[in-house]
Length: 280
Image (tube, rainbow, N blue to C red; front, side, top):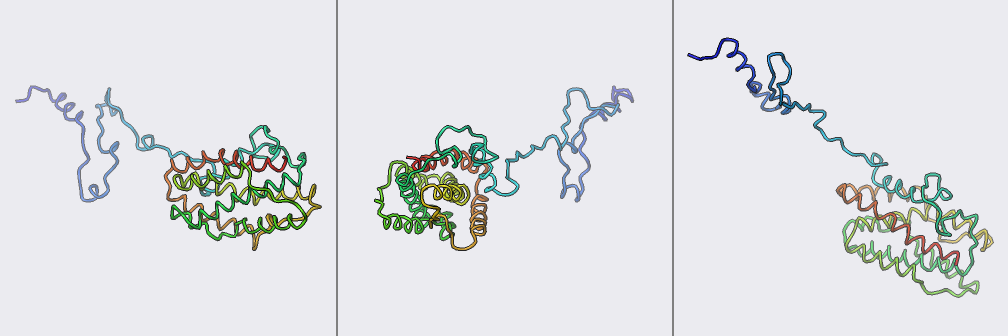
């Protein structure tokens, strides 16, 4: 004979944790744990000391990154634009610290300085094209023959300057440093290398073209160099490369994507040192 009173027997039974009855359907589609096991008092309220967590609050909200919904290229673009100055882009946030960060209208370029810039730029593009033609990582092969290549165009431009009687200088420290860095990076850090690949080609197709036009107006009688011409529709060429970049980045973890984005500042620094040659 139980020593419990009828009421205490009821309370004892009711206060025990209860699992919902199993069935073929419930086994196939089990309810979330918070709904399977609940301990309540007679009043229907949760027992003291028992924490009931709802399924909604238990789920971790996925962090969203600016531009993520449109693909990883948009994430790279967002980070890159923030590193521009207000004089360079309306989305820019960086303060003007270097001469090349001012608006081009305030530049005082020289032909000799511009030639140094073109020579060092060619070395960088030569390096990029070689890396994708002889890829250490298979993903680099996606970026062969994109139509954005600039080495051949720069070779024609340097030949034109030579015809005009200008001496073509050897590559200088900024170009040599960047080319060496890209080579080393491509062999050990594909995410960081892709960051530089994106910023070099896409920056030239946008701000680079504007700079080229303004500089030509000041020192080249508005001559348009081959460096600023592309075969075919540039917007379509850029879209094709965007698609390839997004495709490659789909295989990356979030940490690898963040690592790529963090390399943007380094890319701006090295490219800026080459651009500064225009004003030398």
